[in-house]
Image 1: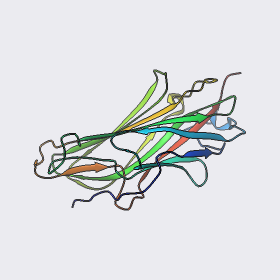
Image 2: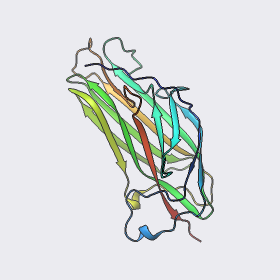
Image 3: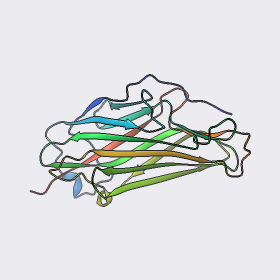
Image 4: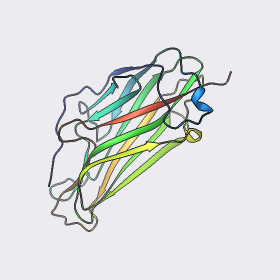
Length: 220
């Protein structure tokens, strides 16, 4: 059964204030005692760019308990077959964030939850990708999640990083943080007359992406 995403009206730029008690996704017992920043951290969305998040189709907001931020999309759709354009097989979105961190602390993305809907004909495949990196830094964390037809259901993927593998913001230096996501689909052996798609939203507009942060103190 074919479905199309439900449109949302949302602002693509929003200043989000995160409380100092942001949680780490996978900490060891030694890391669990690390003191969180005494002050609040402010995250500003500098830019939201990409074919999957055109102006007015993505919104960033803080969670009710101030422990994470979410991104909601209303037109993030990759598709092939049927009347799809040749360029529709790949869509992406890059978030460029300005993070104001209290002195003496640094942060990293500990985990991210992605959700959406996919309708894949037999023989079609799709993949959801995400990468995380700081401006000017060679260190990049990347994750892939594949899907294969026949498939006609909601999907969910989680990126989790062990404490020792986290990519931390440089201490004492202001660097914008980038999150680049991508949806890509291939027709494979499926019929060219039938549409297959994957979307990072839903028919009711409630599907979103959740990012959680980890903290640690910088060296004296």
